[in-house]
Amino acid sequence: MPTFPYQQLFSFTERVFLALGCPPDDATLATETLLSADLRGVDSHGVARLSGYVRLWEAGRINARPRVGIAHETPSTATVDGDGGLGLVVGPKAMRIALAKAEQVGSGWVAVKNSNHFGIAGYHAMLALAQDMIGLAMTNASPLVAPTYSLERLLGTNPIAVAVPAGEQPDFVLDMATTTAANGKLEIAQRKHLPIPEGWAQDAQGQPSTDANAVKNGGALQPLGGATGSHKGYGLGAVVDIFSAVLSGANYGPWVPPFVAFLQPSANPVGAGLGHFFGAMRVDAFRPTAEFKAHMDNWITTFRQAQAVPGKQVLIPGDPERATAAHRLLEGIPLLEAVVTDLESVGAKLGVQL
Image (cartoon, rainbow, N blue to C red; front, side, top):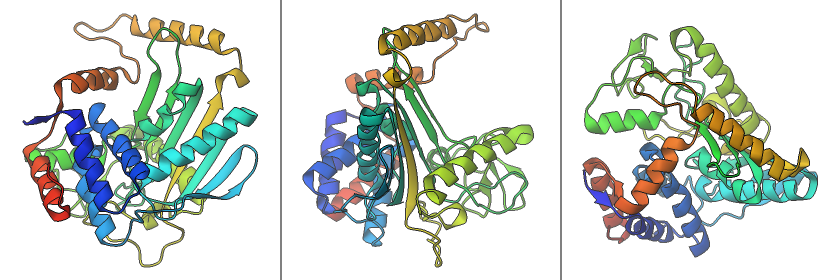
């Protein structure tokens, strides 16, 4: 598997976004947001998705030069209109609005409409850490998920991310889909021509499937929780959909404009674009920051030192991604041959050499 230095992929991706017509600052921001996934080992949401953004731009579904603005606000809340822009740009700008409100009144909450796929949720939540705040990020997504007992695809993978600052210990960063696996994991299995684990997807008849193409062939992703607990993942995904879209005025449920190529947008949308939801909470709005961080260190240390089953270690959310990022910054980012070919095709189309 070929490996590419982070800066090489950054330069290539940035030039692709510039070729789409993004202003320089937006191209840089979109690139940083997208490549944060590759650095953290979430390969399904990084440069492997770049051709998807180009495809949506070619279809007129992405505005390369959006005027991201506040449609409605109170001192602690806002609804942001992304003007059809890249979610990779709209998301960080909306999160910074939440942070600014939290700075003023203790917490900030921002719902977003008229946006697109925003990369990994963790990137946006982690923007709060530098300001000693707790960050929350969620988004609805392509309708690929069947609620418990459903044959219809009505929800997305609808991730939730929470970032919490610590003191001497590394920060706590939870970033999870509300499905057993994100659709990008199926895409990786498709490129490798491998089956998927049982519990990830169901076929068109609602039966468990290990076929990586099951969703493309009329099946659906399954909610987090498996055979006996999928109602919990379904419930979490529903909350994300409501917070991200019903609250903001974006499309929800089966009307969410899809990122995947094998689905077409609804002819009768119920809102504007795709939706996100962000939150920021100032730690010192609850207790002194140093005191909180000391107790977070104690919490993290206690869990990390828990007695584990033989050959295993209890990890803190964010540990694997943090280690992967450190390694890949030094050693480079591995890309599947199929992804390299895809990037070369995108580059040839836009006059940008990988």
